Length: 272
Image (cartoon, rainbow, N blue to C red):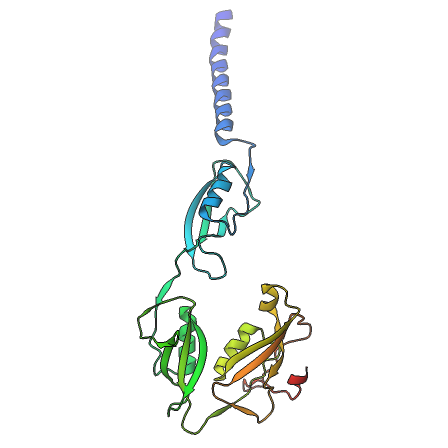
């Protein structure tokens, strides 16, 4: 009887010991209950990020790169898992870095395009309009030359993404003049687009009230401009409009457009 009982218990005991050993090994292997907090790596170089993660038994893997002029070259732009997440040791943290070298693109052929088409093409490719210049030509607002750093640039020449291009446009043969758009309530970025589409250029940013940080400047809106938009007043093609911005945008909104899409003008814009 005793031998029979022992014969039954021994396999059960061995199985229990094996299960306990396996469970203990699994807990040790997976570090059950052990977590580390992922640090904030934004703005760090790859070496700095690697060293910072290494101190927490974490590893780096770069999965992508982007091109941004707003971030230092060669630094972390995004991370996964995000800063503050709790993960197990030996986990990989995936990084997106700001590329060391700027992205290069082929300069498009803008000659003979309309102003609107040329600006749209530049925006799609990631280039900027530095200035609109006008020269006598029968085709009003047609591109007659494209300049980069004050020199003509041919199509397909490599240029850094984000660079600014001067468009030389036809002004007609009779001194064409255009209405002055009302810029009140627009951000600086919006102003650039509106004045260019109106065949004009953004002049001087005279002042930015309450702008203490780059974020303040980005969200500030126009409360004054010169020349002011007055009914029947017109300005030469390529003319300049100076603006005053304010970070206090309470009640400051773009002037509504009428049903034809033309922005309403105001006689008191200069006095606001």
